[in-house]
Image (cartoon, rainbow, N blue to C red; front, side, top):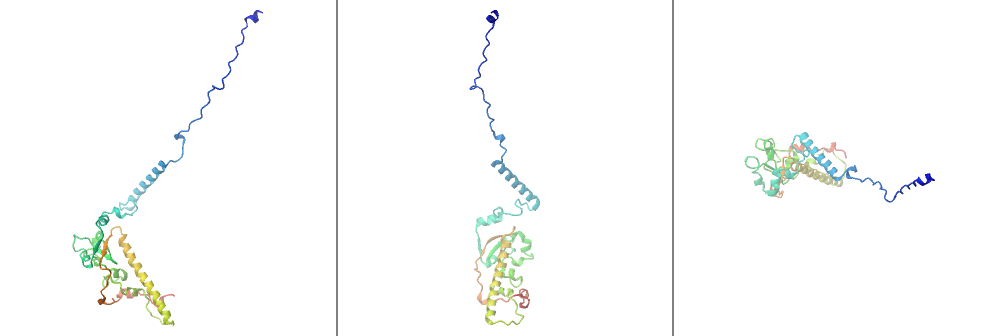
Length: 247
């Protein structure tokens, strides 16, 4: 009995409060955990590539160009100055003053009415230069025929003959067939002249040292009293022969 009297009742274990048990918070995602490439990263990469390309261009081309030799017109001060000043309109007489004899004036030449500044190569186009005969004039005909002494003029009348074949064989074709062939060959010859003139204009217009400054005000009019110009010997020798042509 004494044992029962002195035995203390066992304390009940406290009941767990499941509602108050702290839950483990999910790990928050931060920007540091995002391993994707952002727009800012792409911009940085592009800027780095552009700077590297410009530096390599400057080193490799030896032309002080950051764009692999390409120089936009607005980065060239003489071209920009001419653009701001407006296009020149010169008569043939006025154009002749820009032949390099006056060191205070630039050197101009013209191709089919388009005037180009070639002052950057004064030692070539200036007095004593190998191409000084082009300076101060429109010598379109010479650019086509290659006759630099006889054809220093814009007059292209009769130049198509240099592209027409020499009739060195007797052919058994009708006059109608011959006429049709003649018309076709004349058309092709004129197209060849246009391509040649356009190529020379493009050469001066796209040259890194030359640029267009204006046009010649003569409308390409040829004096009718001068008559048809004779094809120069050099151009005559370039004509193909009918016997060597393959139809």
